[in-house]
Length: 268
Image (cartoon, rainbow, N blue to C red):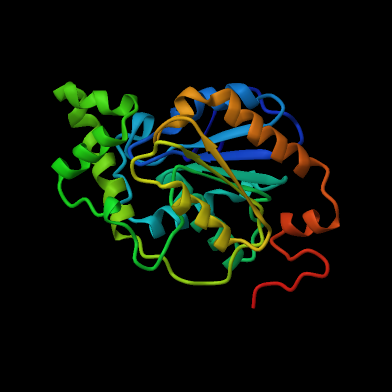
């Protein structure tokens, strides 16, 4: 594919919207395998592979959101040759949001839609659930969040392999400080499980404050990893939004290039 950062799990169409997916803390590109199978070949689905895991396990993980965003912004250009959207889960939602902001700062083509899943909207105060300064606290949080990833801690050999990237990811999230700025001019779909132990629905809904292009809140049954049981439902939500993007009107065409719709003042 010409980049170490992206994986494709199915056939890619020659045209149409491209969806780039950003995994959770400790996660790898394969976290979006099932969603990719649901959406391809109608859409070109790429999943981000962070350093330090799976086939990139020999590379040191990046323990800084800014460094991850900067690296991704530099790798994205070959994949921005058509309208593209971002889907991020948990830490991945934060990365998707900050990458969209960085692309705007660089005057580069940004996403036509943001799907922000399993993550509360950023605030100046941050959250204690991100500030985990020991391995014991990280492991306790992973067990609290549930999902299949928690089972790896029952195997010492597997635990030794997954802890370095997991530790780095939580260090990155814990050190993240939101910097105020103009909201994005990108439509946002927010997804959250109704029993997520660390992301209350109201905190997820607050993403609406970070866009001028409207937001849609979808609450699905389940906890933090609701997606594991709701792939068809999530695929339907994504499909509907991206199909609308495929035939944009004048205002939507402007949004594809990070501009403001006709008649709408842009960020100052």
